[in-house]
Image (cartoon, rainbow, N blue to C red; front, side):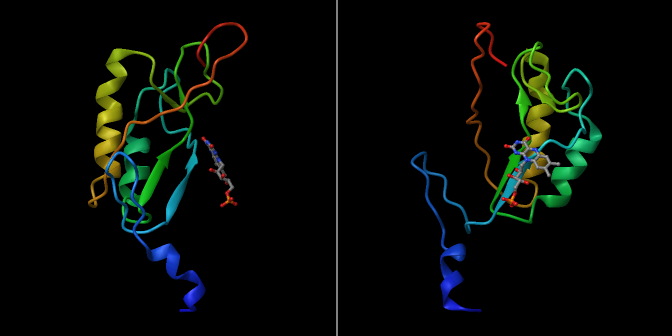
Length: 116
Ligand SMILES: Cc1cc2nc3c(=O)[nH]c(=O)nc-3n(C[C@H](O)[C@H](O)[C@H](O)COP(=O)(O)O)c2cc1C
């Protein structure tokens, strides 16, 4: 392989101590695998189990952080305590081939005063 791509295979380190094996990242993609209420379903788990070895970092699709912010219909939700169990299983599916996990997330503040 041409030497110009060698940096893709370097191990980047993050300030929180996590180090990746390479710079390959799977883009965030809403996959409509969750329930309408945003609960993790079998399709979510299967999608990430199948891809757990494809990149050094996997990013979930956009995740709704308020019951008023459901922009995609069947995407992930993280606005009720009881959604944590499914999200934990999702993180386990993502790590099932040896990856790391981080719970850093970004949310948006809308002019109406709601997190969405
Ligand atoms: C089906 C689908 C769902 C996507 N969902 C998200 C998403 O939830 N969040 C996000 O930031 N980008 C989302 N994207 C954008 C992708 O992460 C990516 O940026 C885009 O496909 C361009 O990729 P490329 O630069 O490799 O061509 C989505 C793209 C596709 C095709």
